[in-house]
Image (tube, rainbow, N blue to C red):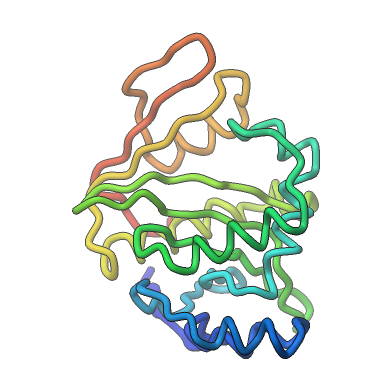
Length: 207
């Protein structure tokens, strides 16, 4: 199946437009910031889309991340404060090796955010795959995350020229490991807590 990029959502490069909820002084400060990230257009396939996150997304992501069911699957399982999230986003926005995507699902003519996934620590043709979360529990068993990852692999292949993705996951997180294996990741090692996996030449085909 061919996956085509579509300009369905606001570009994160138009950063000021994503800051309407902030005070004018804050907007003025952010307006002077520039991002060194490569522009990546939103991409969709059927009812699933992904796009780069913008400032308006960070409270949604923080709420998902602070949910115990998600939080305890992260290396750093601390509760994240409002201020910590904003400070992280400013660093993220300026980091050209970090691309964080919102997963969106269309149903009944309505598009809503349901999860997130990222490629980060990019070096040459390699990157880390992670920050995976499905904040909408109703969509977890409907193949939405799998489909979103295939869209991400399309971006990894054709826009970021990546040929190797790596991840680490808690050994007890059997559900995530099962999905990663379905996506083509293979085990490269393990320790007492983590399983280490790698995916070479990620395929973006959706079967």
